[in-house]
Structures are given as structure tokens and as C-alpha cells.
Length: 317
Image (tube, rainbow, N blue to C red; front, side):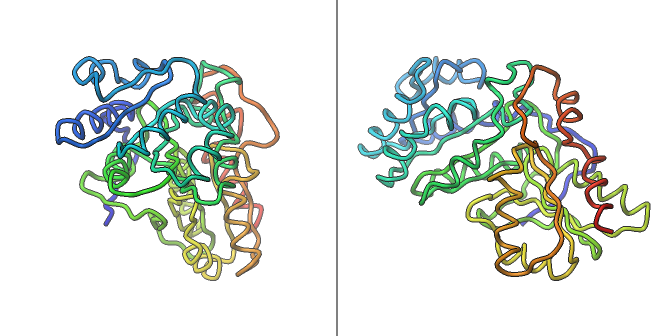
């Protein structure tokens, strides 16, 4: 069950602190959790957790592929490994290990991939991944998620402790726009309808949910009724929800902090072409690599804004 937070607020806690608090809480509760890092302890606020619980936190250094292999081995002993590194390295650098050590062998490992898309900011193009979800969703058994804010992150992390298999959890590290009120709970595999509408449906995930909500508010002022869906589970996508809103509004815009290829736009298009072909537009990164900049600058540079969503919507009205 979800409840929306007041519009325009930011989370009062960084996502990395949500993660560190979750790991510490699980250790204190006696869970067999093992947190693995690739030389990003301070970047993910894990320094104090490692100091207090050294037997539950492993810093493997800058060798991400080995981190995945180590996590797979720990899973085979009954531990519950949670691996964290940046999205770019967790996907591109580790793909063979994700395939062989995790997905092919059905190992119980959760990968927390941070600094998603343009939120890598000043780390620049080499650290800025626009293709990671496309890489991972092609694996047969993977579950691919992108959390929206701190409330969702905390609830999904809690659920992952009791779920078996390879889960890819994409997130930012710092403060996110606050979308959900405390106490909200989420169902993996089901999208959240945040706003009803009759003329067009905006399907978003991650930081683009806030942009989609703002676009819907502005469109309403112009007499356009836009539904907004937070599709935080990319795989398995909520096919029925996509189909129902395609039938209802007859127009779809997808909004993602990711390449328009192989991510949310592609996943939604696959559902539409097989079930309910309607006009759609994809707002996301188009045939470009990343660069250095602030998040605000990069969102404008790559067209990841409410204005870009409105333009895409109006092209079909």
C-alpha cells in the first residue's frame, strides 16, 4: 500500500545512509548478511558499519568481477551477500560473472548498483551508465529494479532479505525527490499508479518519476489529463498495467534515466506491440555517452526533464 508525500520535497536521508542502516540493522538482528564493497566504503557510508561489524563487511578492492565471484561463493555457504558498486562497473565490467556465477547458477546474491545514469555527476562519462539495465535484463532469471526514493529503498531492501535469487537494484547514492510517505509498502513486479488520467500515460522510474509528476501537473493546467505510473520493476514488468493504461489513454510516454534502448522504453514497447499497439514516445538518453556536470545540468543536457516529457506528450495530442 502506498501513500504519496507532499509534492516538491526531497528525502531527508541519503540513499547510501538508508543502505548502511539496513545492513547494520540486519547484522544486529543476527542475519547472515555479508556486505561486499569494491573500494567504495565511504562512498556508500559503509565505513562505520565495517568498523563495528568487520566479520560482515568485506572490501574486495577495485576488482569488481572478483567481488561477484566472492559473493557467489558466500551464497553457496548459506550467507546472504549484498554487493555494492557503481552501476557502470556492476554491469559492464562484471557481465560474465553476473551470467556465470549468479544467474546461470541461480545463486542468491543481491547487487546494489548506485550512481545510476546522470546521478554519477562529476565522475563523468566512464562512470556514467546508460546501458546497465539493458545488459542485466537480458539474463534469464534476473529481477531488475530501480528504486524511486528512500522510503521505497528501505522497504525493497527489507523484502530482498527474504527473496531468493539474483536481484539487480539500481539506485542513486544521495538524496532523491521524496515521492512516497513513510509507511508505504511496495510489491515487486507491480507498478504504482501515482496519478490517474484519461488522455495520456506517463510511465517512469527512478529520478524520472518526479519529472513525470511535474509534467502531469503542468499538462493539467493546459487541459491535458495525464496518468503517471512508477514502473520501479523493469523485469518482470507489470504487463497488465501497461496494457490497461494503453487501452485507457491510447498514448504512452516512457521516462527513464537510461538509454532509450533496452531499458524502460523498450520493455514497455515490447508489451504494447504484442498486446495493444498505441502511439508512444521514449524520453531518455539518445545515442550518447556521459560527461562531467551537476545533476541539474546533465538532466537538461540529456533531455531528462519535465519539459522534455511535456514536449513528447504534446507530439501525440
